[in-house]
Image (cartoon, rainbow over all chains, first blue to last red):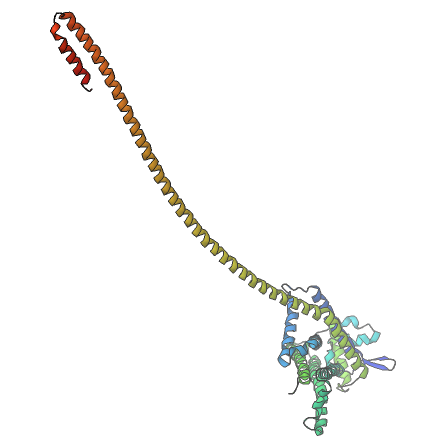
Length: 247
Length: 186
């Protein structure tokens, strides 16, 4: 984690292997969970998993309806739900000790021995490329929603109150992208750096140094939840700014 | 245990090797593109497998609850209607029963009066018949008695005649005697 990114080379293309593997782990986990959950869905008394999922759905629904006309936000519900769940589990993934690490020491393919042979596995969100990708999708959604509900009039807000303000509005727009991406990246990356630093404390296995680790892990779970919430709420807020008429 | 220690030393070694060098913010265009596509695919799959069915179920449950409430409301109205109908029926039945009882009482009274009347007439008739019977019996007794008296008179006369045949002058007396017997009511 602390060393430079593990690069896959496919011809001229270079990819951050570790980030992709971690993303796919989270994706696989979420897809498996959703398939398990969808098999036991009932319109009667819901089970524990369904209850939890319905709680998330209601939670995000209330976030949308708090910020904008729910009818305008409803088409985005699935996207926002996936966003909050993906970011949360991505953030948590970096905190889980990799008990399978020794199994991957022998696999040279795609540098899996380096990617999964570590005691700690990285969060996909600890890579700026992931957070920037998510932030880009948010910005695209803002543009698409704005054009969809206001047409060409949407771009009018870039030159308000007078055209001189255009640069400021453009910076504001770019800042949305950058702050979204770097806030999430910074929080999660910093958390992982601290975990790695704790692992480097001499005499790590001595009882005294075992105390900060669980404390920090617990706090990181909290941070992971907060950051996924913040990212989703800001996405909703930016979209609501774009679709709500000023008059 | 050996594995873990290997792992730990590996981390420390790799961290030390990097030495804090290497920019953590390293933009990689293809990773960025792959992440965008991965996330969109994830959205699509989870939407299909989880969110859509889940929301359908929630909608179905909402519908079910709304239907149940509407049905409960309808049934309550129905129950109220039935209760009112029942009360009206009860009221009507009570009135009817009352009128039937009244009628029956009236009829029975009338009937009792008729029976009494008939009985009275019957007794009257019986009394008359009895009186007539008594009269007839009396007549019969009188005539029998008269016959007996005649016979006795004849017998007395025979005796008298046998004993005092010579008493001629007494015929008028005998006739008078017989006359008297015949006139006397019994």
